[in-house]
Length: 175
Image (tube, rainbow, N blue to C red; front, side, top):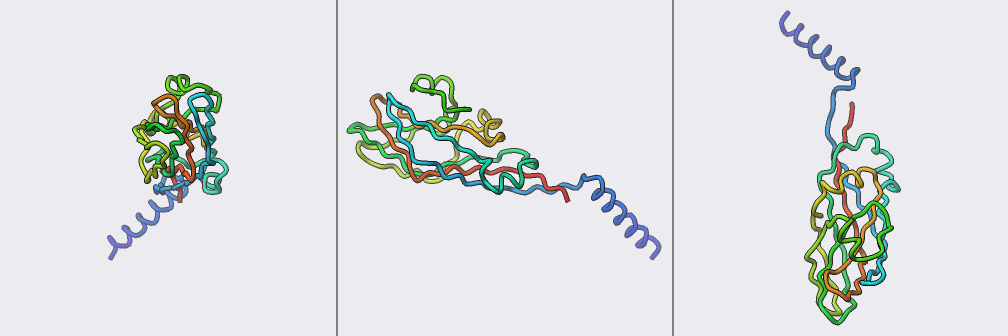
């Protein structure tokens, strides 16, 4: 009986110490879905769209607890408005300042490629994981970045619509 009492006292003391020191951590997963405004890009006029996760209530409530990014995903529609096939690509960059396809390909980070869209047709992109998230991790952790849609072939005229970016974060919760 005396051993059991010591064990209970020790357990309560350890629990209190961890609780008061803030060292008792549990991981929580936070999923943010951000709807992207529809945009059109051509080989001569790029129209990037900003993703601002900081507008989301879940972001605001957990910004100081975001620990790491598990994955970033995309889904939506890409409409090829040309009479030739297009190989669509999505890139991420820190701002909306890039104005040519060459600038996007050399400065931004490719996050989704190989999206083949038939002439005058629409491709539904099912929920897919974005590539190269290690290269854009800091931008996403800041909560703001820009998405550029281009096509590998020239000329191109694509419209991206009904699209969403989904970011899955690990969140530290201190009890």
